[in-house]
Image (tube, rainbow, N blue to C red):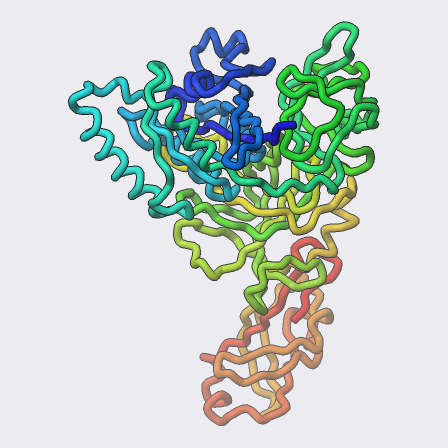
Length: 508
């Protein structure tokens, strides 16, 4: 049996990815080469396409290369992210005449943060006159290497110059893919998780779901779950590129025929081991800012979050660990609320976490990678729309998480109140005014520590009078300089307040 190896073709719209997939492939699937009527009409790829090539590997083993043709249009970035997460090797397709374009750069970022291996394919070299081709290509290679140098891929990324349309250097590229092959880690013992990208009914066969196994394995007659529909189905049969098989494991591209359901309800989603996935309503993660994102990431803002094939809106709350620089999130630890973060200016040692509250629940296994983007930006803009990424460190499956779970998150804001000394009672006691509003419950602050602008520290001993005054006592006597200049002295009360637990009140 052949070993499957998933190769993604990513790049800017109209760089020739689909033509390249055709030139490389010997087998097409039900979703390949822009069979979608809208794709034919518009002349661009609108969805993920899949095709294959059987080759002999470096050790003589048989390899099944599965090509994942990702769309390049800016409006389809969520589909690109979904496609990138299921590949083992990424082909970044660059138009020879245009070089790096906006979506080329975004695809490069996606590959970088998902830690994919990379090959650059310069396509459409037939557009250059034969006598000028090599000099123009050499200039482009230098520009590309300079761009790659600033990424984790580095300068020495393999590059191939081809014409998919004319078939120039395609065989050389195929040989390069065989050389680039490696044995990916396949977790076949984990619970089944399959990303479904197409779904359709066939009379007499039931419903066919095509997709890629992200983890685990599946066999004919297994019971599988459609978590989005909260239904279970029996696996009737399976195919890999039109060949009947009885089992499949992580990394395989398969068509899964199950007992019938309405295919329109699961055009794209997941199939899993029964009971494995439950709806997730909110997550916490160590936020990894994407340095090319020019806007501020703000608490209380909304961003698009992509997990697998799902993209949903999420409310963002930023926070940091004040005690140390640990990147591990812990529910029982105290964190400080962060108003905003500027990715381009963020110091590399600044550890920021994010709470994401989804507007609609998502289906995601623990430690899944997610990408947050601002997809409502102008698609014609040259600005990067990818804001940050991270792996889920904590999640809640509670429908009523706002009341039941969020109060456990010890995220605080710092509060400072400023008052002045009305009069000095003696060297160890003063009466302070304007520290509180008239309607404030002053008795809640009795016992709290205050600090004078001179550095001297005392505590609120009791409320004073009927208005907003309090008496403050000092264990050590105030200095003569403080007493003689009380009008210039400020009284500072520094407290903290939990963002998600108003009942806790102020604390120090």
